[in-house]
Image (cartoon, rainbow, N blue to C red; front, side):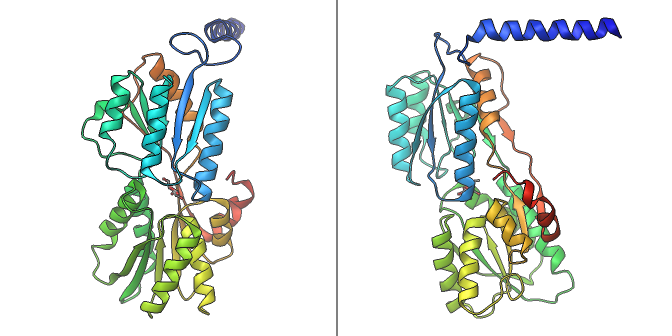
Amino acid sequence: MLKKISALVLAGVTAVALTSCGKGESGAAAPGGGKTIMGFSQVGAESGWRTANTKSVQEAAKAAGIELKFSDAQQKQENQIKAIRSYIQQKVDVIAFSPVVESGWDTVLKEAKNANIPVILTDRAVDSTDKTLYKTFLGSDFVEEGRKAGKWLTEESKSEAGPVNIVELQGTTGSAPANDRKAGFAEVIGSDPKFKVVASQTGDFTRAKGKEVMEAFLKSTPDIDVLYAHNDDMALGAIEAIEGAGKVPGKDIKIISVDAVKDGMQALADGKISYIVECSPLLGPQLMDLTKKVLAKEEVPARVVTEETTFTQEQAKKVLASRQY
Ligand code: GYE
């Protein structure tokens, strides 16, 4: 036993010694020496999820000793392309980005590849068929999130004859989470004709747009049973619209959303939202680990899927105080 412990201690000391002489004081070493520089192009600041994601990336870069060049694209693809080109010009060691939409990345990704700068996709996917244009994709399984939302609704409406009239607030048009959350949900509810999606429009993942579109839904569609919102922020905006129309969210209209940010979880605990599918924004530490591996030319999986759960109102009450974002 004693032998085992001292072997472990020794191993620990060696590991510490190795790390400190390999990296120096300041953290991750770049291939050519010096500090690793990451160019990171963020989608924007459209939601509570995004704010938590930005914080996670910034904190994790700091902890890993990686210098972060950060830019906010304000939900515009052209801004992201500009940012990536400027990172290429600056010869950063690695580029990470969360693509606002799925299509239209091949040209700029080829430019990065030709400049020998590895690219890591984080949070959202691209639809490029050439998988050599990026090293790995870290993020959630959005189709599965949509399926989870659909399964809850199927279970919840088991004893109802229907029709169950659903309105859908989609995320940003053309984005991976909007496409996939819609598809996963439709796949599950599609097997029962009593479920009817009576209106479906984008709310661009923001509270303001969620409210505006829900107000329009309430005017055009008198008999709404369920709202499926692709994120909490749109659901929170929609709650204002529902209350403004004199209806009770959670009772007159059941609400399902995705993310599980604090404000969403509060509304769930308060009975205004009925069910939330979790989508974790805390991708920073995994992103930095993958970066180090990629730069050390180690093998990384082509796809790294985030682990996530779901929350009912009762579960939200229990975990609310301990939510990190
Ligand atoms: O669900 C939404 C955000 O890409 C997973 O983007 C992310 C989504 C998230 O604006 O709130």
